[in-house]
Amino acid sequence: MSAQLAPHVAPHALLGSTPALRLTRRGRLVLIGLPLMLGAAVLLTLVGFFTAPALASSGPGLGPGRTVSVAVAPGQTLWDVAVLAAPDRHPHDVIAEIQQLNNLPDSVVRAGQRLFVPLGD
Image (cartoon, rainbow, N blue to C red):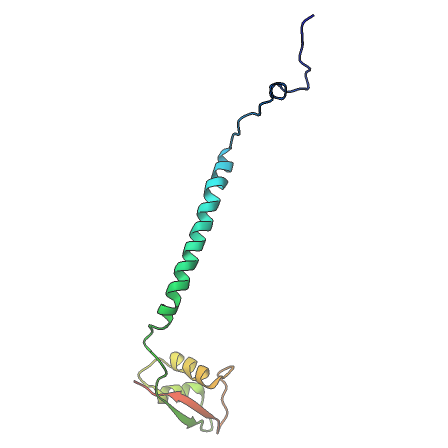
């Protein structure tokens, strides 16, 4: 009588060893690419964290500029106020600054309203 292996038992199960781990191309990509992407994200976050305060403070308008309080005349818009206050600057920039200085939710102003306006350089 000869010993025959049962067809449902794998040869490595009888020997007690496990087959070698074989990675597919996708598995190698995930194994190598995922840590590289996570490392790059951490590195970019750290670079942004350490350079953002420096970039934010190095703009042309360092510190608060000179301002003056003006009253809005009847029929006058925020655009008109911005052009009169700083004729050498673009009105959109001045309007944004006026809105920030006065905590305005939009660009609507009323006659008689007092606004802090940045002076032109």
